[in-house]
Length: 529
Image (tube, helix red, strand yellow):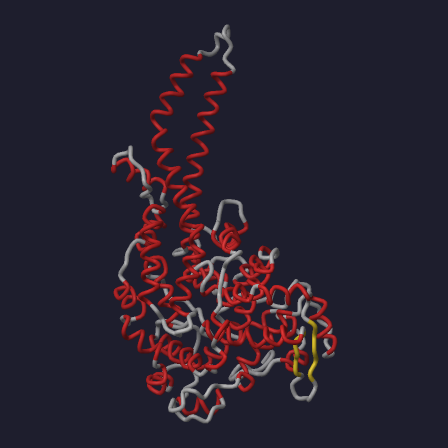
């Protein structure tokens, strides 16, 4: 994870303070840039090319018509998918639940469970199918990008030691600044969730009891601690329970009255009616309040995907290529004013005393939600940044906008492979600029193994169904068979770690196949080394 990602995490939902976790490998702009290479080839030719390493051979594989249709008509939704868990359902949920391994997130099966959830549910319109292809492509970039970045930083993002966090910020930011500027224009910045906002809500936000998401984003799990979808789905479930019980008991009393015959001396309509009236008097206002509260939670959660998307664009995906904390702050402040306060138990309601409202809130809100909900209502950006990463806004801005200035200072010390700006340019980006004297000199993705591998896997994601991948494997002399509906499903346990292809990636089950497609990364030992 890099500090831009930490910033987004902290700014999210009125800038909550989150425990730091591993997250980004490539910055979002780099993610989309590498994904676009695969997409442009697919759309221009109807197929993708896979060079066979160590030979002059290039194999071609057709992209299915439905994939081409999705990419043609819904490129902006594809880009939104490529932003992936850095933006949806929000950065906190993505950082704490989607990226980590099961032991850290509490999600059974880790990251793959989230990928499968997206794949299975975004299966209707071209916009949905474009989004899910992009989401899996983000995971492909993380798998290779993290392996590359972690080699120099000594491991995934952590603030202990703090040099690790700074290294992530500087290195990831510097790679992003070396992207070719002429490729980042026009429709490159188009991103939209039009036509899929309701699906994002139902699949990634609406964690009602008994739903698939409720079993993934578990209440009380580490991954749900500061997740807006999890926190408020939990509150809504508790409110629904009380509301349902009230109407059930009220209806039961009414049935007793209706079934009480004129000469049935075992019951009394008058007595039961009095009991019903007393029950309504004692509970009716509280239930009306709870209904208003529940409805406000519904409204806020339905607005969450659009809010998260706007925050993501402000902080890390805009044509100005800047981290616009002011814009993100404004978006979240408005969301807090319109939604968060009422979602936390202050709906527009008159009729109960403040003491009664406080008692209801305390009864509905579990103890483990009190602290995160309190944090959601606070607005202390610099305080949160200093507490979480030891930087204020200006220091953070400096590291993000001028990583070249700090490169030699931070990348030559601490754990991980030491490197200077000159040697990183020469040996890893394969560019001639010994410093940052020629900002327009971009790296060639073909010369950077992590970028190259990201592009190759992005292409393979586009050639589903499994029969196409199985044909590729057979063409290269392998015998493994893909049983999942896409090559990126079924194996990756964390988007944060290094060398995740070793955990069951179908093309790595036979190293002679894997090594014909993917390049070895610095220090990774190759396919199974």
